[in-house]
Length: 247
Image: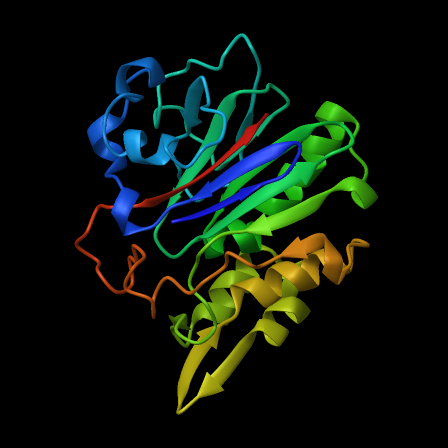
């Protein structure tokens, strides 16, 4: 487990020790499972306990939801979507991953945060751009104020893809072909995808700079057994959680 905090936010990056099977709590209210494991262990990591937790039913798409005071107690893992945004303090918004990118968005000026589940399909299709655009629309955020904090995911060292991956990914969004070419490489006759590089290249073009990205918590889930990894353990339903909360 890892934990980040500053004057505005706190972020929990989980691993196998606090992993869960989303299907087991799907449909519950956060007030009903907040006292269960692994949330007892998770809350020990938070300086200020979130009052409630919100998770969507992740579908590898590009849609998401804004959490307000009115809908913060929606049933967990029920509503389809792959990103969450909020400016409500004390609410833990989260994603569950096992190799996909877990990306936290932070705007300290507008005091808003987001969290994104970005598998390769969502990443290629533009989920991170969609979430950033939504944050700009919803809260008036500007690019120079937004930063990214990235959690554990599959890295280029281990993220092997099939020979047809390039054509399949390009078909989803032809305009990103040059970024795909830069993020795919061969080693010993096998093809690997650098999803982190792909993500960075997309946003460098939009005006972001290296200092806007924090990869301090972005360890490889495949080569480090402490993390849940679908590619390493296909039969396991467990997913590690990434949760961000405004103070």
